[in-house]
Amino acid sequence: MYYVGIDIGGMTIKAGLVDENGRILAKKSCATKPERHYSCLVADMYNLLASLAQEQGIDFDKIKAIGIGCPGTVNTKKGIITYSGNLNFINVDIIKEFKKHTDLAVCVGNDANCAALGEVMFGGGKGTKNAILITLGTGVGTGFVVDGKILEGVDGAGAEGGHICIKMDGQQCTCGEKGCWEAYASATALMRITKEAMKNNPHSLMHKIVSEHGEVSGRTAFLAYKTGDKAGQEVVNEYVKNIAWGLVNLVNIFRPEIIMIGGGVSHEGEYFIKMIEKVVVKHAFGGKYNKVCPIVAAALGNDAGIVGAAALAMQEFN
Image 1 (cartoon, rainbow, N blue to C red):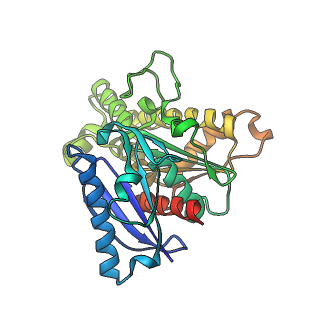
Image 2: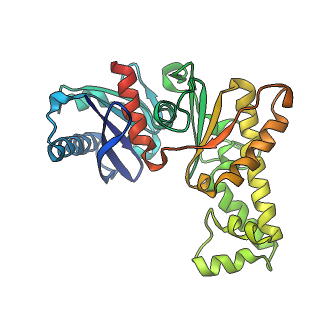
Image 3: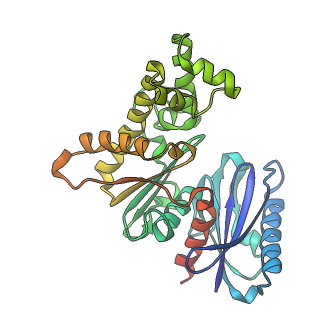
């Protein structure tokens, strides 16, 4: 049997045909265009599904279920996307809408939660039952798997780890509050810190790096760091602490078997992950006396949304 995983992003809708081992057999995508009515987006999702099945020569009766991952607050039990700001979704009964196109079984979940489940079932957390995935991108996405199940909170409104407060009355967050972890640990925050450091350090190598690459990016400070540039090192060290202190809070609450870090920044590699892990191990409750929680790079990369949505369907309908 096969499953279909659909990952709804603010810019792109991605769909993949996935086997029972979490392997993507084929995938397709299209532009999201969130300014349209949600029924148009659902029609696009169905068309991607139908096109995949046709191209792979697979009849619909060979597809057991469809999983959909969507940003925002998702009530998985009712199949309703309560709120997704980037998609202009408010109380959208996406399963009911999808059923206008097909009788296949459909389920929906928060995209970060789906990605965490996918990593546990088929990726960097395979073999564990208690894991945390954080994704460092425009924001900070978090997914929690506890005893093999996604932790969602009431009506799917929980597990928003990016919005724990790590500094009261601190940096403004896009959610409207101040001091959120996301405002310090996201790639967006990294670029803000980099720009501030460049302003205060006119002779930093970061200026040359930006002139060569065209603009400040999440890599600017890391490239300078590797050359020994003092300002670049200060930015990276500050950023590592920003990530680590949020993780300390999560470790103290959940004490997972593993923490996985995804998103573009995670591509910096093992040295970066180990820098974060060192701070977390030192400051988590009990220090060296409690079991060390390993921190690793997430394994599924850009396919985490597709595989995670399919994993949700496998768990829901098996």
